[in-house]
Image (cartoon, rainbow, N blue to C red; front, side, top):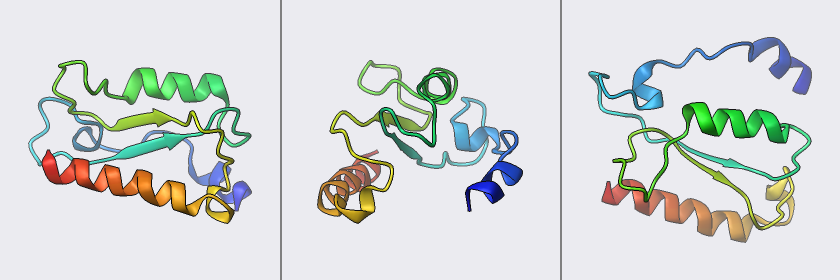
Length: 102
């Protein structure tokens, strides 16, 4: 699976409406990214660059048009679904509620 991802994911193919660019004509897609710390699938430097370039600062009064990006502070592993599904279910429920209030 990882080898296929490396062949497939080569560049950003998403349009401006996904990333929340102000001049997008379509309704913005609501995206949430939840990154792990010290995750062996996404290097810390790469994650930080993605958040800096594509992320949106929410709660800072900027309107929050882009994807919401979070870095896990709970120490969850990449395979969170194996033993941490209750915690992730609560986090996803919060994200869904956030979409409903947007």
